[in-house]
Image (tube, rainbow, N blue to C red):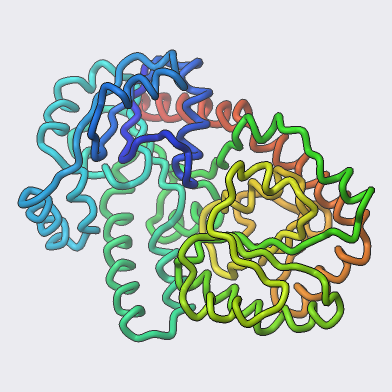
Length: 409
């Protein structure tokens, strides 16, 4: 099978959820299929990038580079999509050069794989060719949840405008794809019901092979020195909703924990926290903020109690997945567990309010063996169900179903 992957970014380094998915999927796909890449991004040296990709994916055949739009052309394309009620960011990636290339060369491929929705308009020229869209999240649902959590009027207006754009996108372009893949059943069920889509399913995000093969050291650390446990909170804390949730934790949970365990440290990892959060951190004893952790997997491999701060989420939370794969005991709201197929009190501790969080932290501090058992169960679950070979096989079956379905039309 020959497949063209259309990517709206350079897949290396795998430093975000979608890049992580694509990078690890390509590790499987470039050995199983004949793969060409089309990358639409801002390039300064395509020759160097080509060598970098071929180093990690030596079996990939051809790589086609197209620059994102800029200046007047970018403004015009953005305005065009805006007038149609679609996300203006589509204008970054649409080009008649790409469209014409796809018209001329689509016969060379058995299937076209779209990574994310940014390049959706190209489905207009691929009506006879099997197409797959990896949507990852349901973005209109994400906007809706964010709107419910936001109290600022101007922010609400901004979110609702983008919710409208995403609803239009999902209604107009998604039915044109032969298969749509989300990373969580929360998103796939929402899109299926919202747009009456029958061609939608869920496939998880594969974990890095290095993470699966990593030797875990902190289980022995817990046995030898169980009192060295600390709390870790990780997130995109430049985002107001995440900063607000961490702030809420520091106001409503931290004082109870500090009273019971005055020497217990809380570490908050993330770049550019909101000022109000940073001010709160500075006021508190034993609360530390870190911008960046070098060798992130080694950093995670310590005796942490890992608290995931969000109470609204769509998609599959890769930071959460990585913590589970390292074998950390995780406390998280149920809504953040979509796509991970976890079991409460077996490989995760569900917390739906502050009382739950306080209770779970207390249990994990008082019973070090629970940190070990919960962490080992979590690691086994993630490594078995989200390894590259298993997720890749799910994609292989989905590609074949898509081909059969298209051929039977």
